[in-house]
Image (cartoon, rainbow, N blue to C red):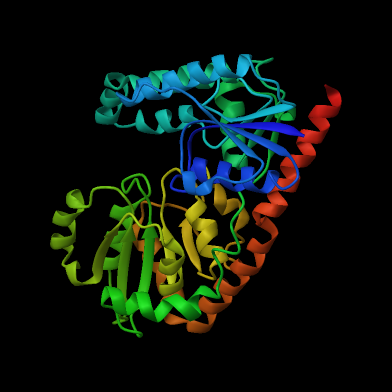
Length: 378
């Protein structure tokens, strides 16, 4: 099969782009793969993968997004592939649209706050993103939509009236070779000592590039609540600006418990060094960090508003929050894991076991089956 994947950036640094890389590399073992992208990490070049450079206007960002979609569409008009796979928002049309999110859902959440609503009208990116979303979801622009969660699939039906029969849910995979409990043996003590934590510290890990939406404020407030004298510390990993939270941290008197580590490329070491992964997100179409943490053997506390929460059985393979903005509920979930080491280990072990079902190799087969059906229909 000759298959083309569309992505603005081909690297393992972002959620959507990482998913494309993982799928493309798996497909390239059995098929001819073409990548249409504005930029790619040359270290990811593989045999049987052909890269096609797509022009982009570099700045401002909304023109970068729009220009990529336009130029990519022009380039694909002169190509010949059995199937084209493109993320919703990065393509006007594709045989298979992969919905990694529904931007309309994000906009509706933002509209609840007048300041966010003002930002929405000022920033043309949102208008363009909604335009691209509407255009791609018109009947006849796609043959199949793959949604990465039921949550996102429901949003497409709610806001764009996409027929249920057009949508197939295939969860994002996880690299079970990179994210594995075995990493504890090589990374746990080394990274703890590198960061100045003792072996007895109970490390909570929060990883995100959007601190506000992912619930960092609620987590800080929960950490400030009594933890029954347990040596709880919080590691924060991500590319967002920590400055807005410094006043809150000082006010809560938890500066000695909180460490910002910036953006890291060695996340497998952080999962290995930590005891509990926490992500009280207000909105999350999926959440690769959730499944990476689970595959690494970490017990996860997250919101039911995360797509990846659909893979968690509450109390068995993770703990789910009813209200991600309630510090008391979050503290209660964390304390259950802090107080009971055996329970903590059991949840982490169960999580790692369930993630074996979601290796990228298995997810690739699900995509492949859809591709074969579509190709047979012509």
